[in-house]
Image 1 (cartoon, helix red, strand yellow):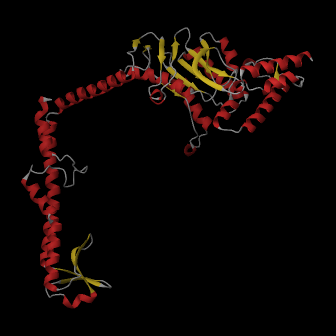
Image 2: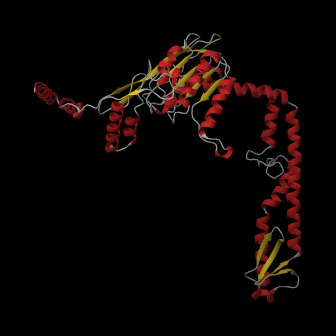
Length: 462
């Protein structure tokens, strides 16, 4: 910094700390830097005081107690006298304008004051601009040195802050490798973990032999958090930051693509699906085998075969041709079985614990797909009434009994005109089944459980 100390001293002495953002104003040059600037600035500062004293002097001389000195951009400074006091106006008042209830006048002293004030304002603005340009020219003479120091200071600022964040949040140094093999152990989301003390960490591994993960999970688990935190960790590693994990091996990545959420663009007449497909097209056209891609659903809001087929085709195109390292989150459970035909795809899901009364999202990634979305449970957690949830469960049981498919849907057979379905005979629940369904095991004592068990055993004998 000693190399530019002269520039620092110049700025400190010449430029105001609270300088105006307009260089054509009169609040740039610091007080005491230039005598002419100080003189003009003093004239402007004392103008209101002079006007107050002059108005008081005129009132005393004329006896017009309601006399006022006013200013407009159109008329400048003038004396305003109410109509009832016009008889007291002296001869040296020069008439300027007549209003309905008053008249306006000027005096030689007021005109002289106005001229001096306007000159001071104009001269101050011109002089400040001139001095500012001279200061700027002196600074430009040291441009190369300033640029070098600025870049070094910026690097120190960034690296020191990254170091502080890494220390405060227990980040680790990632190992950067050229071979595309991603290994992250115990990773967390750098933002979400600040709000969630009991953040559940996970692991991730992607390589040449396993570069696409299909992830199925219940809604409301936080799949966007899972997808984005992996992309964030890769990004953080590439900018030179430590990462929120216990261990991380990050391959050099050329691009990060995200297809996480979309909404319609009414201004451009684009539907939500059109926006999503534009994002997908961008990924398919620009990603490479050295890219990292996160895809959160492909038009989940309908279950028709064309959307499911599209999801499959996108998945297969990336697997067969692009080979980008991809996390593909979906609710299309049909993709689980179909993906077994793809060599470098692996299925994962989120562990869930449930019984008849409770549902707990464990937020831990485990191998294997899951073929249930827990829509009704999520609706209950969101506050939908028990009566509505109960009615929905009854309808779901009825549909499952009457429309049981013979086998998992095959995406290879989507060209068939209709899906083969068999009717299952609706059987009435037995007495034991009815009693078991109504039992709340979470609100039962051991003795009550033994009594109910004995009762059920008796029912079976009967």
